[in-house]
Figure 1 (cartoon, rainbow, N blue to C red):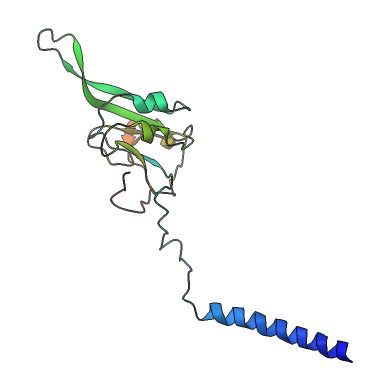
Figure 2: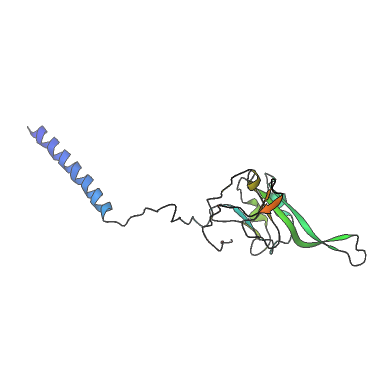
Length: 175
């Protein structure tokens, strides 16, 4: 009979302990995020999509040399030589810069090798990068383009802004 009452007591105590846990979490505020309309901001060290600022790039090619997957290419800007206009002279600015997100492994070596302050290439906090075709994975930047870049549309033979790209922050944090 003592064994019967000890089982009843242990069962009742387990029920009360479970209800205490339930009551404790019932009075706390909700942590649910309504995903399509609300987005969580990732931690500072999150490696999201790569962004590029052609205005701060000095075209040193260190990011191209540091990339293990060879997904970055760039071309220096040139000006005609004043003495001989047929000869083009390189300047410390970038003419165009491309990143192939299909090859990129988000290792962050390109960002670490960039000598400019603020960085001209950096990982954003965007975790929703949308690609609808293989062409959209290759992003190109020139002077005056947005941080998300443009892609070359083979059918229309023109550069286009990517559609469906939702940024988490308007101003992207640079490290």
